[in-house]
Length: 331
Image (cartoon, rainbow, N blue to C red; front, top):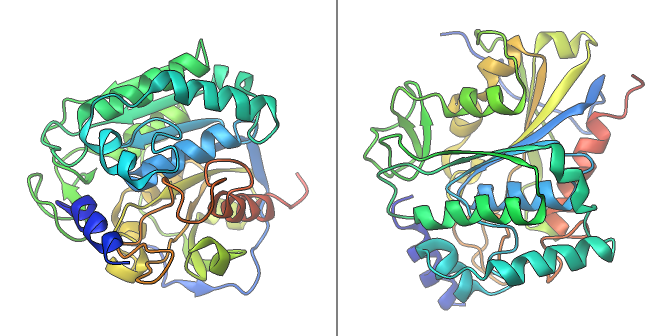
């Protein structure tokens, strides 16, 4: 991931126990989902996507964790701004972004901002990360505090890791930026963020549940792969009430690029198993033709359509359709 934003710009300018092997589902299964325990997280482009989903559907999504991502609607539909201040730091134009969020809420294109007030947002920036500026992550924190006075924000920026997903012991070294973009640093980012979003947590355990592949509705229109991954703890499969966590991968981190490494090794499943959490791993598709997305990044600058950061955004709509189907069982 060291230079994937540079590569993205170049590409666009040219036009141990573990979960069982994944099983395919032609339809999305329904579970006894606890709608008060739905949260989201993401790394890099996935962090931007997590923030968009949270702000657009704050009546449903009750907390978010952003690793190396910036404020809601930062790019304002412009790749140039996205690759500029929204990555490198500088003036992200928070006044205008807050005005946009307020206008979208008042017009009903995103949920009322009041829903955010009781939420918690965990933000992370590695101290060695030179791909995304720490200023950008701090801007995301300030943006949340502007549009949702009273919201709880937690910033972690003192972990000695570069641009990637920190784990206890999975992936490459702390100073390496290469596939699978997981960094074995003795720091459990997944467990830490889940402990903030879903306290208190029981101790992590072996991820012996089932890993499934499920349909992603409207995947072709949304620039997504046909299937997402879903981790199902044994308790959830048995019908117990379970929360839902959505985990967005970063650029070059989908199944197209690294198989199921992020899904299996990012660290979410071990906590999910012991805390009755379904974990949904949506998957974006890469594209070398219009709309150009050669590195498989989530849409945080508008390559799907101008409404990408609202409830009608194609990728947001697909993910919320999956959440709706997963929680469709009678409680």
